[in-house]
Length: 364
View 1 (cartoon, rainbow, N blue to C red):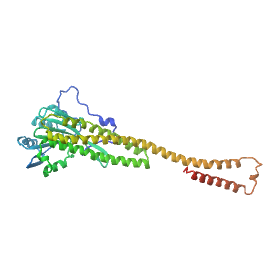
View 2: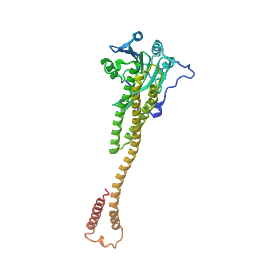
View 3: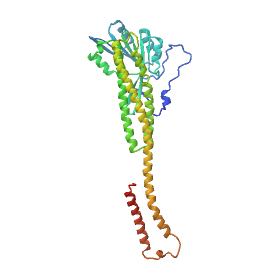
View 4: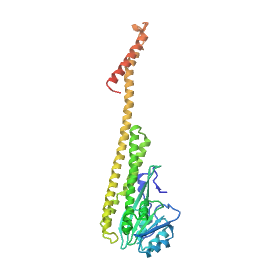
């Protein structure tokens, strides 16, 4: 189950992060966020060009044995709420305390930071709930070392199934490369998932546009405002990606091979495309508000047009009825045998004649 963004939340509440205690020493380990799993779960994939092994729900000790191997290891921890497990994991792989502090802060903005023998990458994974039409988000932290890729997720479920299948099937170059290429493949999967979310948002925008044209309602307007808030939230998660991948591209760290930098440039372009799409969708969502106002005004004009036509028809009829409703005695038509049918006939002719005239002028 992913993090659910309540549609009633304001944009401000989406950006709000739980406050940490003031005055703590740098590297103090405090979990910031929600607990989304009952217990943390370790899993790993260990591989080389001719070897592959995968285990799910293993102990930390089983993961530590991978340090003795010359193969590439991808070790994943689902559930970062258990500080003791994260700390033990970090100490076993010689991770800097500041790295662990950032991993435990699940509200941390995307970032890339280099250390002496490792590199930390933090970014967001986004999902689109088909039932609620809401964006769900989860933070993933990735640590790149010379032999391993360590990933930390808030809960089970991610967008890496295709990477796992590629590793298992030995398809492509992923089994022939080092951990830096694996980190690229994971980043590429996350960025590709952004386009899937954006595709769903685009379909939602098309639906709202169609509905606003045919039947503009306050409920639809509220949905547009909610979608705008979600796009702002999405932009907040994607915007730092440009700088993050740029720093990866230009990094002089020995952890990232020159052959991987070529693929990072392609990933950078994909990040820019995702950001441009978000910006375009934000403009479209703002245009939907104007469309709502225009549709409401158009419907009001149509109603006023009908009412005006009806009022215009009844003006001469009211005039005729008003004349013969006066209390003068010397009105010749009052005593006439056919006066009443004649008055009704004149009214009918006036009404039909005005309707014909309005229709000929295409006023309705």
